[in-house]
Image (tube, rainbow, N blue to C red; front, side, top):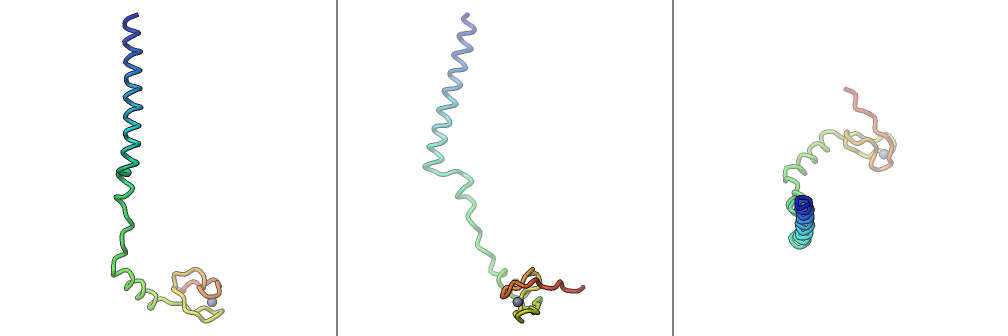
Length: 90
Ligand SMILES: [Zn+2]
């Protein structure tokens, strides 16, 4: 009977420690913040990206047959009228 009592007391102690740990962890998360939430801010785009996209847009443009607007060749539809762009023949 003593062994069973010890097991039950041990289980209760582990349960209490677990609950306490989770409560303190919740408080810690509330005040300090989760470790992986603020550690990943949106990285600013590299300055060369806009130049590269502009260069690509200048190089690979397709004129829309519907409205005559120039769209990037990678675009699926025309940005002006929404007409599907013809696939570049290669
Ligand atoms: Zn168009």
